[in-house]
Amino acid sequence: MKKNVKNDVDGEIKNLVYKSDNIYLYRIDSHIHLFGYQDLTTNDIFEILVWGLKNRMNDDAFWNVKLAVSDKQNAKSINIIYWLTGGDKIWKSHNWIWKKEWNELSQVFLEHFDDKIISFIKGAKTFCDLRDRIKNKLSSEDFYELGISLGIINKDDILL
Image (cartoon, rainbow, N blue to C red; front, side, top):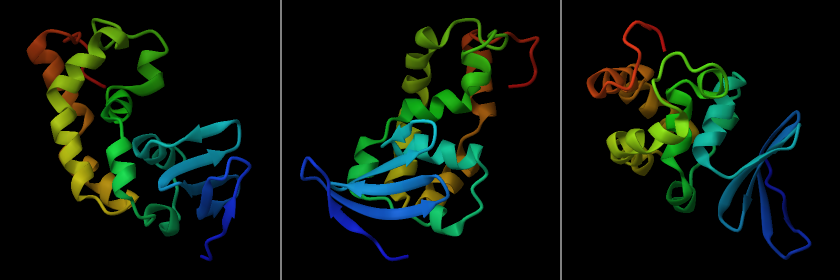
């Protein structure tokens, strides 16, 4: 894919990294940004990763987008934790799995999983690498087991 380079109004340099239908990945001043329909905008690699998974991206060009050091440094582990603990389905609706709300439990999850997630980021070269590292080394079950051990999950609920 040919990369388009242009300056926007603020003088930032934009490189088109990926384009498909209504979504675009730009590298703006060395940080990756996802823009798309319905006011979709983010520059966090975990949010972009989740977007790709939720939308069942089957395009290798998307998954093979290279991650820059700045992308990894700006990544927020809490974003992938949110989705692995149930995402909008759990946290924005009737929360029947967790005994407490997201704002109370997010720090607990970060304390237990942040270092592990950061180690995944360091070795990942592309979105595909990051996706595979998370799928192979961290899952909803890890959060479920933590929840049981800390007493923050409803034990009667066996599915996450």
